[in-house]
View 1 (spheres, rainbow, N blue to C red):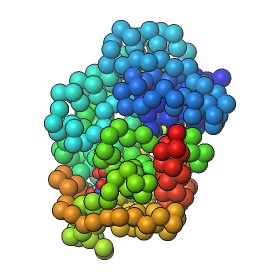
View 2 (cartoon, rainbow, N blue to C red):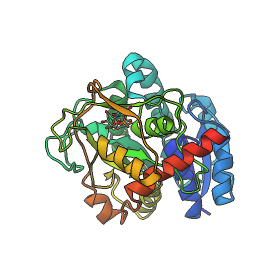
View 3 (cartoon, protein in one colour):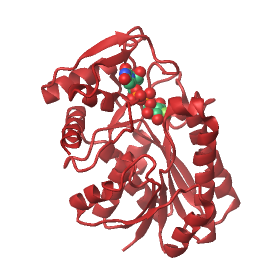
Length: 338
Ligand code: UFG
């Protein structure tokens, strides 16, 4: 059985990715410091796949601790690196926390991969590296621009660190996946997103409003240059996104180019109002919302050209928006019950 190491494997995208690797027949080793997740996620994973992944509660920025895991699992064929802070607003207030954790974490992961000769990395990047692109949809050739936040900058810098490291080493290969907006939960409702405190992102805010935890959703701006005036994003089901990591590892194992970048989205943009309508119609829940001013730092619209991933990875997002928002609702109901 081939083994992979997944950092941040109890987090939102990480946990769904653990499930997909186990479903694909890989043995999974999870590293997570549980700073933004809980240990019970492992039980959720086990209830879906029947397998509890090997788990280390370790911070990837702690150099010595991390090395013990790589030493023990040097037979791994790949590392999937998620572990990082991800709150855009917080990164503006505490930039050094983001640079320290997100940059040091990757440097430690790469150092160990070289030392223990683990040749393949899949890196969790973001469409934030494109900023507000001039041409839509966004292809991978769209220029990477100055980041709008320290968080975004850590993604940009991390991609550069990976390229420099690959150029200086003989055996290292990597794929960066630039995610658009992941939403939804596993169909079993045994794992999903668990935001700490007040959610920043649209979908968890919607489900928490519908369940009564929040009074109403604020729609940030209806005066954008879009058909209904609200901002547009490419919302991708988290399980579809997770599967992209499995095909990326398979490509790396089959002698891909040394470094490649892929957009991972659906190829379709949806406005905030379209998401609200999809939520109301697929769940039958009425949502309280009001229109407020634009949120600082938000871009107007972005969605992916996914033809490169469709062609080269033979991967395509499959789960519909309606199913996806419904899965987020089923998960929210379960979280509030437990
Ligand atoms: N929105 C609302 N109300 C809310 C929350 C969000 O109207 O309460 C709107 C936003 O203004 C935006 C859309 O919903 O138009 C999506 O917002 P999210 O916060 O869910 O997602 P973002 O596109 O702002 O951010 C996401 C990731 C970031 C990543 C970025 C890249 O969360 O990590 O995409 O573009 F950097």
